[in-house]
Length: 467
Image (cartoon, rainbow, N blue to C red; front, top):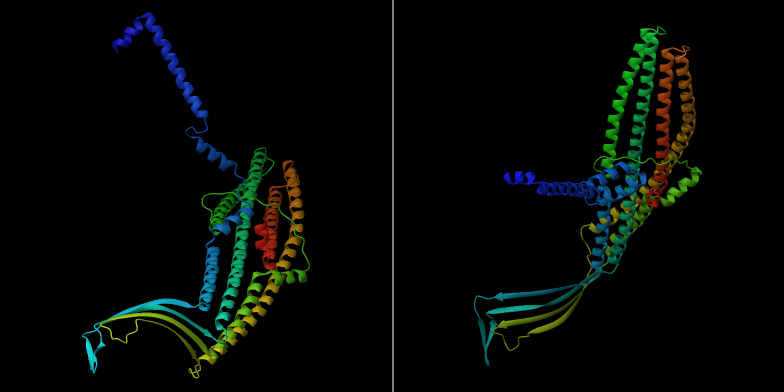
């Protein structure tokens, strides 16, 4: 402290001290401002992230498709089924190949035993003996059952692949429905907010006219009651929006808050119903899988009938032996082969029962295939008629919204000039809210009906990947 006082009392030192102080202050501000402007400065990542979050355009339906196909547990389960089918093919291929194995054993006896002959003693039982070697085994049915099983396993891979496509299309349809559910509720929130704004304006107008004696207290109370009801519906719509977004996040696999980017409403050119049904029968993954399952069931019958044929077994063995003590006639190694044929004459009716079961499964596959064709045709027809219905409804509701909006504007102006009462305004507002709600609901239902028709004709997965 004394040194500082000395510096301030000396004029020269005081000027130097003042210069140092000014330089320090300028240097401090230079560091602060230059650090704040650098990209790597503290707080910059958070600001950049906030800008990205604020400017993020939201998830489109195509984005949700991509995320869902990557994260869905159901699709991963189907992929595992496909993997299992591929391993079944490897197992079937292994049945066509011979088995090579190594063996070995060691035997220790309780005592050595010998046998006396005229020209000496020979060991009958050694103290110990050991053997080891290699064995090549292969067993085949003369009917070629192993080849049939291998062909069945290859067709099983194709069946699993088409089953996976079916799961993917059903899942994408669920994502689409959840996506448009969120858009419906979001539009309902916007309509509710606009309704609250109109009713607030009308209540204020009613209060103003009440003060000057142009309307009664009843009009003000009615306007306030309608406003309170609209506010309650607005809160309800916001809660439904949160619930719909949570359901979409669960289906797709999104975490945290998110926004959606609405896809422009596209009009669908509808082909002839018969042509659509033909496309479905040619393109649906279920139909393709059913065709392969019929072939598998037919091959299962051949496989079961192959049990009536004999089996042929081939063995090739190299064996090395050792023992102590050994006899003069002991062979230390040998190579031999065995060819064996086995033909079971009676097994208690097992083969007959297996053949009958295979034939029954074949008939089931034929019936399931025919039933699937009829089901697909009905699904296409339902989707086709629903799309036609939604298209007609949408055109009518578009005109209704225009008329209801013009009617509300007209009645509101009439109320301002005393040519209409509060009830007329309420009725016009209610009509506008209902028309807007029905129109946007029909608009999104129309988009969903397009996707359902794509699913019914087997084109949804191709369309989603094409996006």
